[in-house]
Length: 155
Image (cartoon, rainbow, N blue to C red; front, side, top):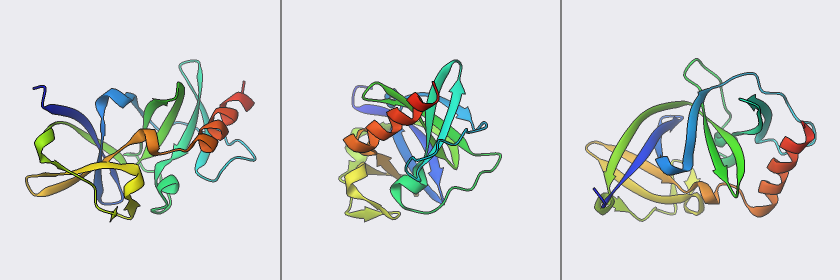
């Protein structure tokens, strides 16, 4: 088991993505998001999640692979990056998988419209391809500061 990683599988468009389960605090249904004026377009606003003001990011907007459409399946992955709690809007969170590290290949330059700078690898599982995201690379330092300020504006 030490050669496996546990990932949460979610969808963006018709592609399946995975992130290490240790990077995800919880998966929530999308609730009312309060817009924060003057922030980047991918920051949709903030929510009050059990007393914590949490900035919400549209992951498709951030990865520049399309616009987010909200449905009953839309979910928010609550994560921490650099001690900042934030939510990532995804189309659907579908599964938790154990993946042998030996089946993870290096990411190609671009897959599913996402460039390799945001990817940690690609795993072929039976007849499907799972794109593994590196959440630590989703936002750069300046963007992390902007996300942190969005939360602070609502306090």
